[in-house]
Image (cartoon, rainbow, N blue to C red):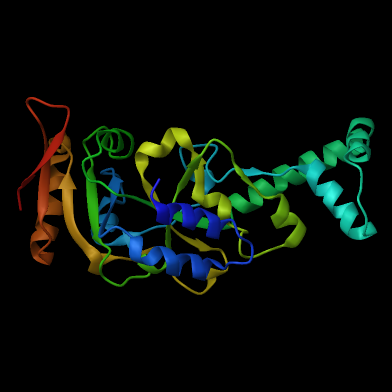
Length: 274
């Protein structure tokens, strides 16, 4: 792991460091180009023309996306310690849990309610660092029949000003301290943590809360930073849509490439077509 990413993780998990400070640290390390893989669905021209729609994590293909961890034993122990101003034995907390089904059910309900509320509070748009990731073409661009949009991150944009890399880990982010301290500095951390099995995605996420989108529009307008469009190796399945994309790109002076399968290696290579 790169040194700056280690520092980034430490800053993100420090409740005394704001998200603004984290973003300012990460800013110089944002890749010069980021990408989004898309399908030729009913919204394909919205994407091509620069709309970046942020969605709730509950809509994603990973049911664990933005999943939270709450240690209610730890929470209860620390809560009583703060209230009583003295050490509270963990054994007493465990006894409460074991011997009181009502409390256990209430904590279970609290977890489910908290998880649901969180997944409907933060909206996300996902980007990646490569246009020729074969798995990404398969998973997010309709089995290579879709397209991929390139964004120039050297230019100023609302996306660049609110984007952070995903942390891949075997453990969920522990939200216990968020409940205890109500710290705004770590409150939305779960959206930046994913299971290590997704590490191949090399994901970056731009984000906004419900409060943010009461003031600003969703989708975000990113048309000024689109720098290229890549058509999938099987995009001829959507010949009409492909021609529409090429016509639009020609008018906007956006280069268009067609991904082609190498005849010798497991790789995709771009060929300029427009």
